[in-house]
Length: 344
Image (tube, rainbow, N blue to C red; front, side, top):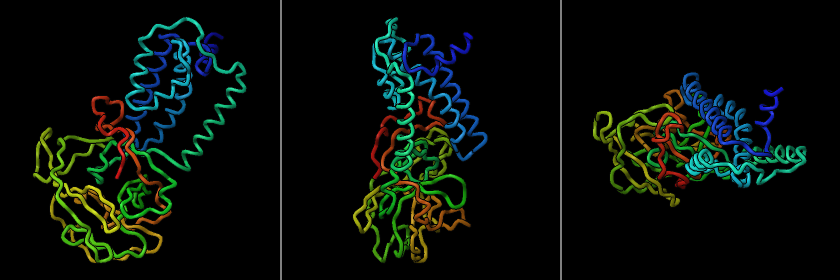
């Protein structure tokens, strides 16, 4: 009976929680997520997070409940729990709550009528899930094909509504035709457009995209992101920890879209015959031009070919959070400079 009572308390959004109870539940929640992420990488090497999300979802309600009651115990409204959704700031809140002494009294109380509270919570979850699926959703970048716009380990926000009719210059996520999961790329041409690569310069409908040098992109030679990929360098083969450099350019399309691209070396993909984009499909390129298997390559060659409109899942609008390690719990690998960065 005592065990049942303790388990029931994990799902209560009223009352208070001691510092010990809060720390214990938070540690269990963090450990389970770490185990899930590591186990997921062993089962799904491509970086799928389905199992992790499922396990995290099961633990989310008791964790959130104890967090809310801990806030009550320190004299604050349970609404402060939403701060944990903010990268970096949420970690600070958890540490502060773990160190603070409780008041030993109920400073704030959620609705006494639990039926009313549960109903409101269910409606909020359903509404949030529906709006998320219709409007926005997160996506984790796995590869370096979109450097330097997107890096492996970037957690980006996808706008579903604005992806209905993409325009040249948009960065989109789409279902990869050759393997499970989504991938990202930049739309450079739409239905009916004629596309050709001429000595590394993109040409759309006979008009060459303007390119101007923009310095050098440098990064350390080390494993990056959830799938631990190594970067490819223009300055030859370099050892681990050394500087990996690539020439950087700003490319401008005829319609005015401007964005950064990288060049590593001269390859056969820098030259191609002119092709016409079929109706209802799009031509996408990676910004890291010599390290991307994009629409220049057919699915039989490991590329994506033309991308049908119905396979587009969203337009990338912003980097929410970024980590260079294999999972977001490796705090020293966080790229704080990229938080909430807009994507051009």
